[in-house]
Structure formats: C-alpha cells, structure tokens
Length: 193
Image (cartoon, rainbow, N blue to C red; front, side):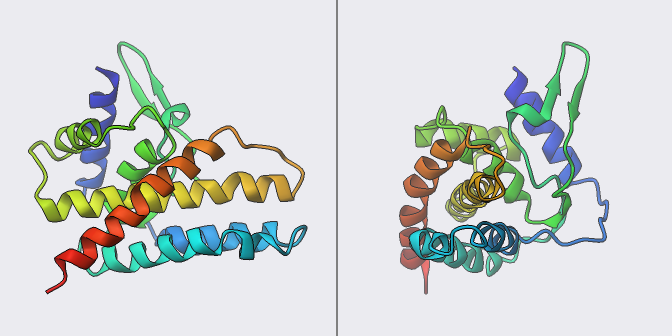
C-alpha cells in the first residue's frame, strides 16, 4: 500500500549516508515561527507556553537517546508525497536538513488524526524499521509525533499572523500533540535510571 511505500522510501533516504549542510532543529524552527507570529499578537507565546514547554522537554529527552542525525525531509505529510502506480516523489524540501529520523516519522502521524490508535502507529513504526520497535525506540519515535505536531501547530499560527490563513492541519496537530506529549514525558520519566 502507499503508506508502506512512503515508509520504505523514508527509511532508504535516512540510511543513504548523505549529508546536508544544515541541521534541522524542530524546536528552534517552531520558536522562529512563534516569534514572527508574536509580532502581530504578543500574547501567543504565553497562550501556548505549556505546549512549547512540553515539546522542548521531549526534544531534549530524545536527543539524550543518542540517535545519529541523518538527512531528513523535515516536512513529511501526505500532500508532500506524489504517489502513482509507477512513481513516488517527495516535494517541498524547505525544511530539509540533518535531523533525527524520528522527525520525519513524526510528521506523517503528527498531522493526521486518522492515526488515533497506538497499535496502528506501532504498526507504521514496525513497517518503517522493518521489525518491531524496542520499548525505547517506540518511546523515541512516538515522542517525535508530539514534537512535529507542535512545530506544525506553530505553522498556521505564524501564517495567520502574517495574514496568510493556513490552518488546515492546526486541529490535527493540537490533538496529536496533546495525545502524545504527556504520555511520552511520563514514559521517559519512568525509564530514568
């Protein structure tokens, strides 16, 4: 099916050994978007401070997992995949850079409420990895669902701030951020030695 083709493509790209002369930091990206949005509404940073704090904490915890950076697209969600019977292309590379591979996985799930069941998300992760994830991998990749959802929650907030309404996935990001963030923070806390 198309989703499994997408996951195989991402895995190949991540394992390519390529290098991009830019390190994509999802939290720094979201902070830039929020700073620009605050130029028209200074209260936005305060209004969403709790979500930002959770995403930032999760990102710091995932960095401690020691996953090597690899080339990543940085904006993986369905409209950026052009799929036909004979080809599969990925467009819109403006956020491409060296990053954690879980970032791209998180993008697919973080902006799509169809992935509301953990078992379905774990099946996607199994397809991406080519094997069932360890508990640590599951925690790591699921955390990036919340992280990516935060980044792309900030995107329509920023776009609205510059009078370019673009909120078509804002609700999905809000839902997925809130669905995963607290649970993954708790899982990291439980896993601490």
